[in-house]
Image (cartoon, rainbow, N blue to C red; front, top):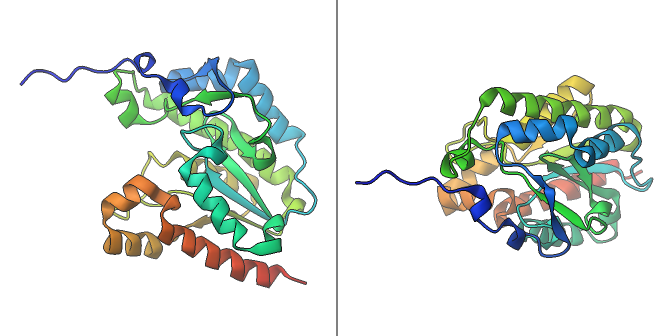
Length: 252
């Protein structure tokens, strides 16, 4: 059997993932070193990270910070994952206005939902995922992957600490476990939020819990969780119930 050939990431058309706006020529990062270099020297990336960490102010009506994974499709709200999320949030009625959705992003750290509609230039950044680098013949240097995650977490930590009084509760609805119910180094969003929460001293509840992931895998199969993750209907139903109960508790 012949050796499997690696694919050059620049041979696949990542621009097809951008449904509105454009893919920036200088916003394509295909291995950990490229991601780290962007976090330290790309003016667009560093400028945004500093804005979120040092200057950004959440809308005053928001009471619950909801971190949610960024999506391959851009803008985020055009993706299936975000369409599922927004359907869930719409079911909350007028209380939806209290929820502030913030995308956890590599390499932009945190992207509040009001900017989903404003950005005209988007990015492609699969470079922190070892499986992607191996599949596309890209060098995977764990040192730079770890440094990138730590640096992103430091910016998110600064955001959490500075906006501590803005929210009554914070939750991250991300891939918390694999389909084998393990915590994986490849779950970068979980790792970024965990590190940021610890560094800032601001609690962020990680969801869904293990028992919810276990139930999805048992009922629908491992493939359902692997493919859909937190966008799976059962995960979204859990989120809806969780938010309904939370908002009742937070009501005056």
